[in-house]
Image 1: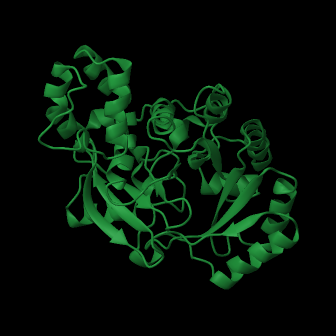
Image 2: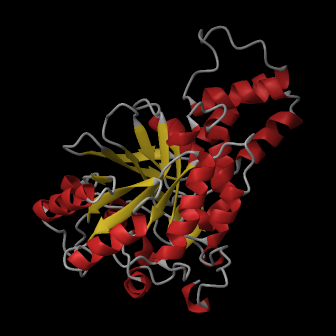
Image 3: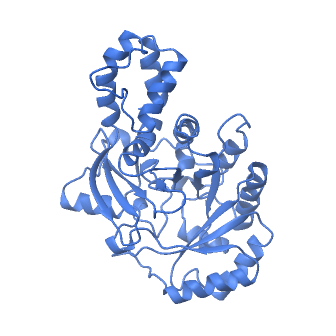
Length: 366
């Protein structure tokens, strides 16, 4: 379901723009329609008022809580069931000055990052914009949410229309600051183009770029179906968007022991990011059984962060949320599938991703 479907449903019942805004605001903030259950909101047209129970049931059914997995760091991973039985993950981030939520934009992912559990099964289907916002509405029943990062399951650039529609709603009636809406991508040219094309009157999110290495050949191996842009080209485009919006880029770097934590990579980071408007997030890999990678020691990760700080690269060393509950991206969903408590396969008609690979991506990577 898309947000536009909700709007059309309400408009067909006689809702005016002010009514749409109010109903959508109540939904996105997980608020009741009336302060007094015995006195319904008479400001709504009668047909809309009569439809509210059915609409609320439909919106609630977009994302239902299956299980909660609190971690020692204060984060909490959520396994959510969609209306068709598929599952996705969301993460209530570590409590801080800006309480945040990481949301999913797809069921599965087509990029196939070698260190990510989500990509193992490929892409099953897109999430509608309403399903994306429903994750926020559900999370706000559990904790305050003032920041939303699109870093969960899926590649947002492969579901651009729905992700951008969700961002527009969250940045308006959802009342989330624009810089606190973070669009994450592996570096798809379509994402850079779409974000750059947003007007100043629209919600323009901050950008996170999954970089992971300064070596173009290694990046092709780690992210086999990502667009074939070099790290230099990716940073150039990300930096241009950051300077246009005034929001620094968040460069994401998942640390893999013996793979992308070498001294050569440190030199590559200095070359790429010196003088750039952004911050580097070093994130030690979340261990996944059966994958050919190891989590580096915290001492090595801290040494890298200190080295880069001394070289003038703003660097943050981040804990991977949910490490102690084995909650890396896609792990909860995979575990639920193994237990037989969640759907993992879509009908054949849904297994073909509605993603058109850019020209730089080999056809085999689609």
